[in-house]
Length: 254
Image 1 (cartoon, helix red, strand yellow):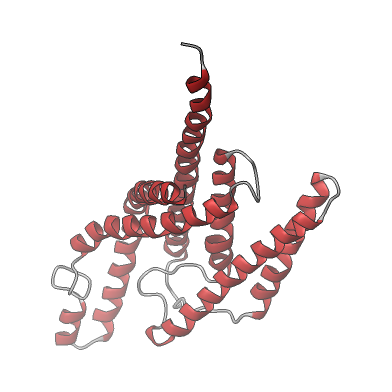
Image 2 (cartoon, rainbow, N blue to C red):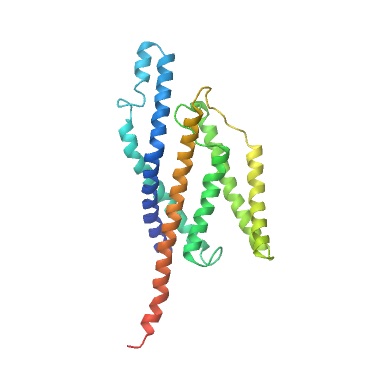
């Protein structure tokens, strides 16, 4: 059974990754190109003539990885991301099935995908949103990565606390939901307040471009998790129905 879920998660994750890649290509890549153009224009304005010529090609055709190759690699990256996420999700789903959440495989997949999006994507994104090229100090990339990973761990820990709290509350469903939400928001809110803020957006960087890039970034993740949850739940529900129908057909009179 676990192997079946794993294969299903890999295939659905790959498909959802390609769907998300299409969204990122349509809505994210134009913002990346605009940010790169600003970065190269600033480099040309500040550098001497020879250096400016080199800077002008840092993201272009003469770069180590050209922009056309980067665009094509986008689908490879989102596909691999989908494979990795799909495999992990399938293993977690197999562990949750019949123990936590809705009894229906379809609803459980949607609930698990939505929870994963909030805990792993939305929680760190609110504190440390994605930035386009030309934004961010290369010298702080390690510290920024560590902070982002810390926020992911906080989101996962808060989710575990919320689930444990909901299981302990035996009152009506509304009280259970309220307790779970509070248990989730307390550690997340504390992390948002206590962890250092990273603001490396240069003065003069277009606010509209920054906002659109961040919307495209979170939108890509939302498309991925929505597509993955719907597809995984649909396939799982169909498989469960076929399995439940086997004994009936096998025992039917000939």
